[in-house]
Image (cartoon, rainbow, N blue to C red):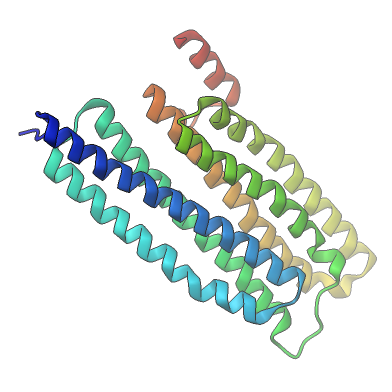
Length: 241
């Protein structure tokens, strides 16, 4: 039986949904901070900061488990239907992507430890410069994706999906610059390979931000756009409107 029948129950359900929403925003803020600190540790060769980011990843994991438990409890207790169920499923998907953002930030922090906590030659500043530059763009995507959820704003969600196309171009440009760097000095090939892994982690964070944008469209319109092009998404939204 669906419990959502009287005013008291509806109010209680609204409070539970607000708690879920607040948890999403908390995780979103946490993983953005993790990303910022991980990249900063790399820029400043700060191994202690990098280790702090690695240790703090457990906080993200704990929040992920907490939201999972809340989602299961809500579905079992309220048996939500239609848009209510869609909202709960959306929260679950968004939190999964945010937790994976935390994992990628952890990888970047581990790269800092690998570069600067051993008695080996440190990479040239030129090699890691693109990571810092790309991370600014990635954080902008992530901020917009989280805000799109917070405001149920389809325009912001579309903007994030559009930015993912630009991200692909930026990522390829970074790889070309690193290839040129290898041709100029083959001794740096090891550092370049490791840097590519860091760039790949940033690219994946952008992909998770794009996913969140798609989930917001699903939440508002009930449209599953995960495997559709931007043009198709815009066309469907226009036709639906």
